[in-house]
Image 1 (cartoon, rainbow, N blue to C red):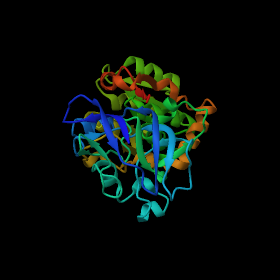
Image 2 (cartoon, one colour; image 1 turned 135 degrees about the horizontal axis):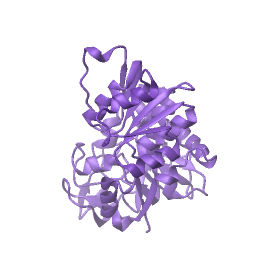
Image 3 (cartoon, helix red, strand yellow; image 1 turned 90 degrees about the horizontal axis):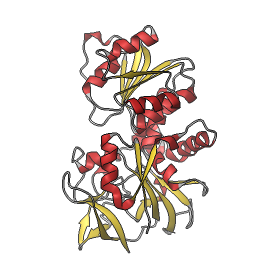
Image 4 (tube, rainbow, N blue to C red; image 1 turned 180 degrees about the vertical axis):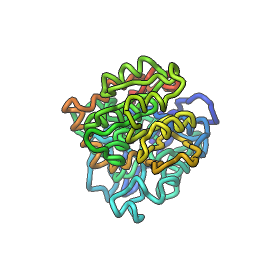
Amino acid sequence: MWIRAAVTKARGAPFAIERVELEACKPDEILVRVKAVGICHTDEAAQMQHLPVPLPAVLGHEGAGVVEAVGAAVTECEPGDHVVMTYASCGKCGPCVGGRPYACEEMGALNFMGVMPDGTRRLKLGGKALASFFSQSSFATHCVVKARNAVKVDDDLDFGLVAPFGCGVQTGAGIVLNCLKPPFGSSIAVFGCGTVGMCAIMAARIAGCEKIIAVGGNPRSLALAAELGATHTVNRKETDDMAAAIRKITGYGADYAIDTSGAEPMLRAGLDSLNYLGTLVMAGAGSTVTLDAGFAAKTVRGVSEGHSVPKAFIPKLLDYYRAGRFPVDRLIRYYPFEEINAAFAASHRGDAIKAVLRVED
């Protein structure tokens, strides 16, 4: 079938909306008419080739829409269902079978190597194959995805609201609720007030953390972080020692720190802000931090998609949203699909915490 898709043709090149050919879904896949798709820094990392995604490609991995067709082997959804699409996992390896799809042994290949799970490419432009992304490629009017990697959602929810849950939202909230599981009354510092950081802050409030410290450089974002659950804010541009500021707030240092930036100064500040037994989570792309003899008994750990099992965790987060405890809608700014380049620019500047494209056929 013929669709419209935003094609990434070369490193750093603007997205070009083109008429693209999409092959039909396989027996275990579904065809989704995309209604909204979030813009994530991972898309930008692929566009700029910080991630080794083959080009030309159709990016996009936070898609939401309506199921239009299902493969012969699909039983978990049917045409007309509303779905959010999320990261790809194989369903066959040890971690997947053990209920940990976020640790899938094929994670890198399925999400970043430009092919679908069966090793094929399904998109063509001018007769030439295009690479896929997250086995989804939802910067398009339609996409094909494995049914196991799509989550059914209630029909009354706005597609633009639910789309970001597929990656950034579940990652930020999952770091806190699935990975760290902080005890009631604990302290946590969140470095970076983008989508992942803001969702971590909201999740920390749900978890009952006593001191929730937002660290960032945008006064407007810091003000919003305070409204969403941060008990304290630290403007990195107005302090010479972020770690000292956090230790002053917490007394002996934070129990937990989350870095969403991947920038070494922030990572170092996060590590130094911890108490003796504290834990630092590195959630930024390309994160690196130098360890030294002052490491004490601290823990440094990575995270994958917030250690989230999407079919269970996304509905739970939507329950929190409905209850008014997870107001993710306050992060979102909408753009027409045709303004994808403007939306990326706004996201890069920090004008939009979570830019979401509304897609019309």
